[in-house]
Image 1 (cartoon, one colour):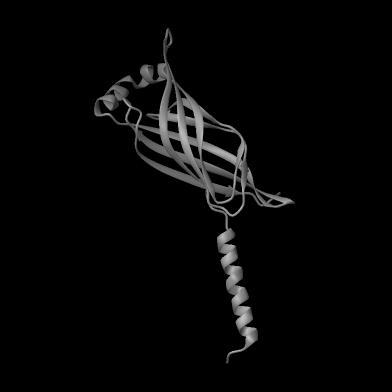
Image 2 (cartoon, rainbow, N blue to C red; image 1 turned 180 degrees about the horizontal axis):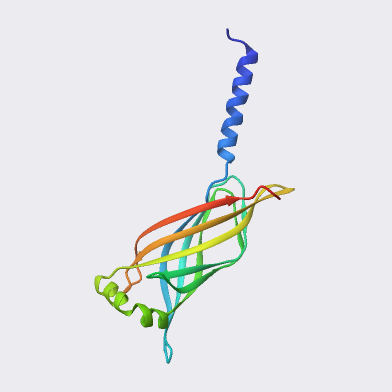
Length: 181
């Protein structure tokens, strides 16, 4: 039997369920857009390469997030080849932006331990690098409460080592939410 009480309770339950689903925290999305060579230094110890890594950051959440500075580690053939620095910042709710990260790669490590693999990758014009970063921060849930989180992002990127074009990438992120304030 239909009644106004049942209709109001049903509508309120549906609205509450929709609000909970919409407000549930989602992983921010990091996507590597480009890699630009800025400096190529040949010195006695080898080669140092400075790059600008452009990353697209998307915050799909209904609240802004604030994050601490972090260091992205760049791996080639299983060994750490360099790093990029992510400065502390914030991201508005349901927004996206481009972040430019200065990076330095150690060419001596590349040539000393991975020369054969690197030369083969240059010949086939495709090399795979892996970049990982752990970003910690807080989502501003109310004026009195910040919801702390940690996001681990791992990107596997195929790059043309001659022109530094991004060929293909696979990004994985995993978010940990902390219950305490």
